[in-house]
Length: 345
Image 1 (tube, helix red, strand yellow):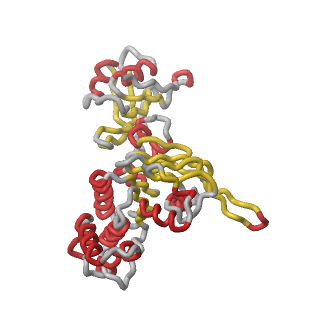
Image 2: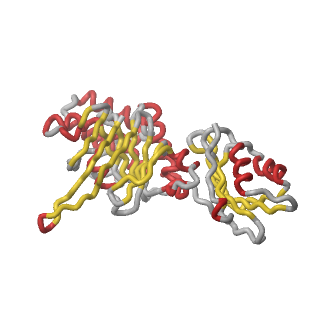
Image 3: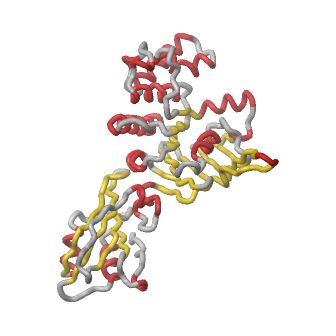
């Protein structure tokens, strides 16, 4: 487990002043989980990455890996404990004149591991990441995805407890990105390691992350499990993770709702039909998306409700949807009807 507490980072600026790039960062990444850190350019993601790996010393605060505070260590003690964190770089950062096996062996050679053990460990790692047949190739002979797998194998060489992936899928095509993300999930599950995923790609977060933290202007402004944030009708990152593209309803008397799948129950597959029967109204699906995230259905949709007889109050409609395991938010009701129903157990 990695725990970041009250972490701040300031840099010196001209005139004897300082610029605070990170402010009071609190973040916990449990074992066997992938936590994504997202945010716009200039938010502080790169600085956070360097502070977590201790390439930059935090100005204040702590970085603990399984209870050991790395941020107070120096010299040989820091170098020893920093082995607990492996880093996967955006460009894989391989040495072009060394073979795949030689690149993966670099951390082991640095520590003076005997040659026989290095050879065994390197080939185990290459097999683990699916490129055991590429040991004698050079980086220039590999595809982008294969080079990234070499980078992952090298990051695992010292058996770290935490993997820090800094934009590791940026610039890769969707198929290769999918294979790298699948590999990261396998490493999480089989090796039991914690993974911090620095990224700007919402598809990556939705596909692989268990948790997500949003960094803006050096501060974490929103965080939580991916499923919970997607299920929250008012979560900004939830909307970015699962955006809705809908067709506007044309009837002036139509009520519009945003419907979000909750997290505590299985939603009936025929909930639109059930709502239609309950209201005796015409229910239209204007747009949305439902996906399997974390082993359960998650979704956000826009619906229209056009009454053909007796009308119902928006809050009554929301209460019924709530009973089916859904959140509902009126999009065009009067101000008094703007609401969010609490999800039932």
